[in-house]
Amino acid sequence: MRNSALTERRYSQPAICNLWVAPPHFPAKLSRVKTLFPALALALFAATALAAPAKPNIIYILCDDLGYGDVKCLNPQGKIPTPHLDKLAAAGMYFTDVHSSSSVCSPTRYGIMTGRYNWRTKLQSGVLGGLSPRLIEPGRLTVAQLLKNNGYHTAAIGKWHLGMDWVKKEGKTVAELNVESADQIHNVDYAQPIKNGPNAVGFDYYYGISASLDMVPYTFIENDRVTKLPTVDKDFPMFLGRAQGKCRLGPAAPDFEVEDVLPTLTTKAIGYVKSRAAEAKAGKPFFLYLPLASPHTPIAPTKEWQGKSGLNHYADFVMQTDAAIGQLLAELDKQALAENTLVIVTSDNGCSPQADFPALLAKGHNPSYEFRGHKADIFDGGHRVPFLVRWPARVKAGTLSQQLLCLTDFMATAAEIIGAKTPDNAAEDSVSFLPALLGTAKASLREALVHHSINGSFAIRQGNWKLALCRESGGWSDPRPGTPKATALPPVQLFDLDKDIGEQINVQDKHPEVVARLTKLLEKYVADGRSTPGTPQQNAVPVQLVKTAKAAPAKAK
Ligand SMILES: [Ca+2]
Image (cartoon, rainbow, N blue to C red):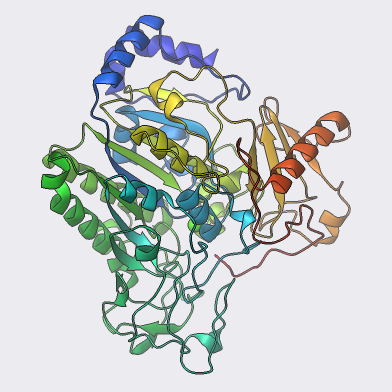
């Protein structure tokens, strides 16, 4: 079997940990959890783990729209070189079955920050805009606040996209739960301080952009102020070099250019690590949340990276993103902090069609690897994401995990790592994956996992089974919601991922008992306001499990 063969090979040749070998295709025995280490290694490792310092620094790097198949070490057929991510994975653990809680940006970010499924909020579909108010409810505990309460210095550097309260001009409004309309972009007084941004939910420091890089305003924000007033209107090509397709025209700082954003965020992140090094060594750890705005649109690699991949500018932008992460990791080494720093690299959803799938497929590269669909979809291409972890003090190098995890699981994991408890009204959908990191997990850590697409369609995954409560993609790929083709399909889709990782054969009519069981479990998760043990909680709004032919928002990113 693939996994045991891989494990044996790694143990007979320890050097392989440093010489990354692209993993072969998984036969998708997804319901089984493999024991990766021989017992002796486990025992020795457990002893090492016990001796490790209690609180690691934590760097959580969230790429934007990076596909599972875009990371070379996860996709044997991948054509984009990602040497820094490959090296990171080889020095730690990579996961093959991790999912963002949504297949689009804002909702996934809510789940990471709160450990709660995004569909429990008032945002039931789509994403926020750059001017939308805060989505994280007042009083809700975030992972940043939890870490801050436990002695961490905390910083968010990058794309927020979780809403913040701008001061609106008198009598003017902005879109609360979707992207602002063209006539709303000047409704904000950009000179006034912003309330309820990242600083209000647990971050000591914030530097970044309000939302996606193709959303207004085009200016950096430091804590509660724009660094430069957006005094002109600008737009940018969605894909470098193409005249067709521009991002939203709107307020910009005069010198703001989209290709400067990745280098700027990288420099800021490096500066942050440098500035915290002395205190981190003296016992005050840091948490750096680094949501990069790439390789999301505008696809804008700098001149130095243009043409590097030989594929297209999206692939160039992926390479530049990989290099930026490499620069940050180099600083961590330079400051001698790598050993007890937990580094996680993942993505907020699958690759967007903006990457130009036909052009990439023609050159043999599939950003979604073997999974169906892409960003926005209920299919795995929408939400199965790269998940790489390095933590030399406690995570064995050169290991892999097939645990089924959700990005909401970060908060419970962070809590367990630092020995903190979360209250009943927090982290309702968060399951600690620390046992997976330590190699001590004997069974599946999660009972099940809920997926959510851009139009609010639901799916639930348990072991090899995936049940989608929709007829179609729930997003942008074929068959699209509301189309005649979709309407003719059965109301639900059941896939056996052990036999059909590409979600091609709907077996709902052959296994009505599985459909009934998973539907009931999903209904319970909704009704309880949580999917983990604890006191039932309230959802922000009534949650509609079955959406009827609601088309996916075409423009929301
Ligand atoms: Ca995204």
